[in-house]
Image (tube, rainbow, N blue to C red; front, side, top):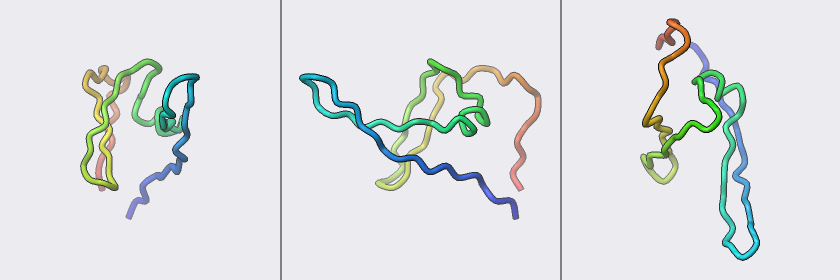
Length: 72
């Protein structure tokens, strides 16, 4: 059985003068590279449940390689 990669990140926050605190998450570089995520690319979060989010790319770019990931 193939083990899936896991990346643990901590929720951080930004507090600007005169504004409420805003939480944010970063995407680890190996994960961004694995899915071809690029700087400035727009993504959406889809709420699947209280403990699960799904990252959606509404305008994905064409892959720069013909290699495909196969599920085992």
